[in-house]
Image (tube, rainbow, N blue to C red):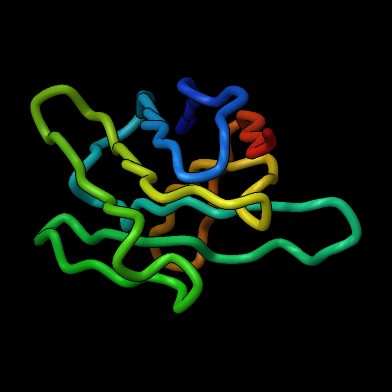
Length: 115
């Protein structure tokens, strides 16, 4: 059973940076497309970024140029570097592992951007 554990959220001022980390266990990491999603109050869950085992990436338009997703096969982790954060980035961020129609989720980590 795939297990995902996120860390790295917190409170940051507008313009600041945070780095989220997700640790993968329970299966073969390279089989999965890894991604980050977020859920803000009153909004639907939104894709933030995804990365394949070949390191092809995809980003939501709202984060392009500000966020960077990466993965470390040896450590079985996926990172989300978030720069130039603004209040609209406030949400719970969830790590996702996807393969052949199956999706696994972490419990989420809160990111709050506020002065």
